Image (cartoon, rainbow, N blue to C red; front, side):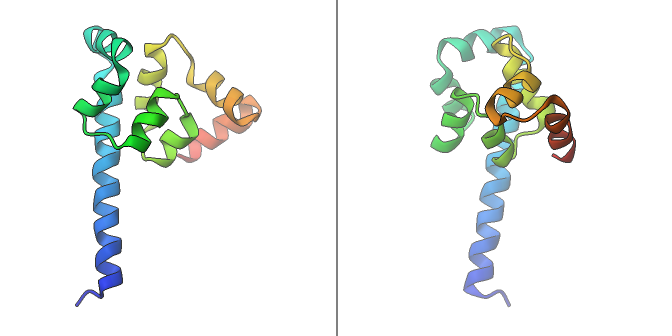
Length: 111
């Protein structure tokens, strides 16, 4: 029998997993040029179409790579998001973390 605490933990894990799936679906959708245009025009609305949480929407619109990774985004999908703006994910990570290229590559390999 599950205790109340383990039941809450399980609910959190399911919510977190479903939120990560929504985030990755959004990023993956950006491989289509028309979706890129819609996203760039109205990023908040586009994010809401995928059911993203407010925290996820802020991370997406801020292009906060480390936060997006923490929220369950896959690196390959994040590349689609950054490419939508003509940006390179490695350059953004270096800028946002202050780490070297090799450190960022190692960090991404661990995710």
